[in-house]
Image 1: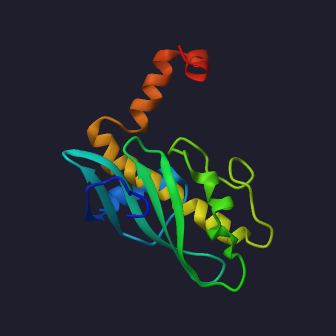
Image 2: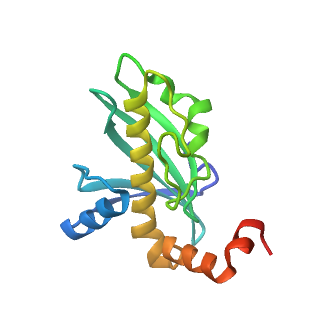
Length: 172
């Protein structure tokens, strides 16, 4: 409810990845991950999807941290909420002033430290893990929810090519 407050109902789906699907996601994000299934919460109002939320666990420096990533129906990050942080240092990744950086990001954004995410001194591993998890969630939503509806990153890239470079930057 925190990330999909306008939805009338929220249903849970477990996304199980086949070895081929997992390899595809790993190739898109550029690194391997141990999970083979993910819990996806889908917010709906009437017959339309409002967005998706994925609870994710990832290793900070030594211990796992649990957070949730909300993605709207067009593939933009709505918000990132840190749910459980287990390390002695680096809890700043749970602060709103840090997590606002992810809002509006899409699967085509790099979501990398010193590119479009500002690092936190003393929490580099936590920031790197959080950024990797956000990217993974965006790729999962893109591949398994948006692309089947014709709204995925491949269609976005095609529309940008059709509009041309300057029109994609400055509008019509």
